[in-house]
Image 1 (cartoon, rainbow, N blue to C red):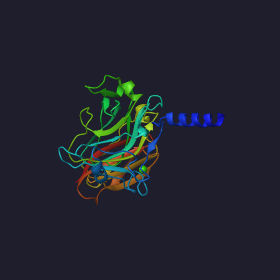
Image 2 (image 1 turned 90 degrees about the vertical axis):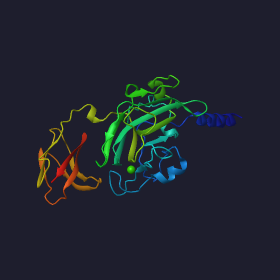
Image 3 (image 1 turned 180 degrees about the horizontal axis):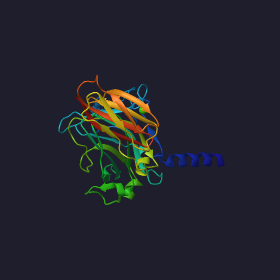
Image 4 (image 1 turned 30 degrees about the vertical axis):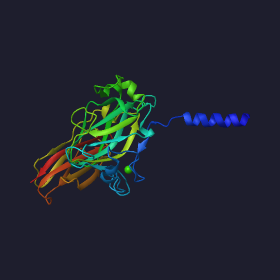
Length: 294
Ligand SMILES: [Ca+2]
């Protein structure tokens, strides 16, 4: 009898323990599934969402998540918006000490105004209080993979009108739905128009980016437009720096790792004329600039 009771109490306690967000969990898409991320139309989700096995920020063997909108102004798959109602992105973010969502993002068609949306829900599974991060992170189309930190503390959110009146802190402690969306305005819905949103390593982070505490000077380039040589001047505190250059289609055309240098130059004399994007990544920052090859 005692053993039966023990087993019963074990079963009860394990069924009561609710799976929820865990500090520093990562959706890395290495299993080539969307890992619970989907769109409003389940039929179109299987068509518009893909999970390529290669081509993430680490190149070959780095799987990632890719969503291509239909480009229509309305209807299924027209909005640049994905959501998760999986247990993994629900529950008590504050209790887990999660203060930011970090991820790798790439926009290959149209700029992305990235925001995180969170909502709790009522007993009929409808979102009740909805909120989105107030400041979008702008990902320029064709700028390659960017490492992004979106702070998600209560003061980072705009609580949308028409809800049940929970505060941002209350929603953060009882999340049922999380959204990743693009909209220049603070909205629960993504914007329409053709977008390709690539994502990797969506992380429930307990720290803000080093960027937020360490000042990082901008790098500079000259001349712009460049004809034969593009000079690159690096910030003082850059360490383990990689210079990458992408063409307008997002194809990497140049990459070089440098250390302990304050300036370097790139020979562009044989490159096609046009617009390029140069990206400087170091231990504590990633920055991009556009330049023109004449
Ligand atoms: Ca990956």
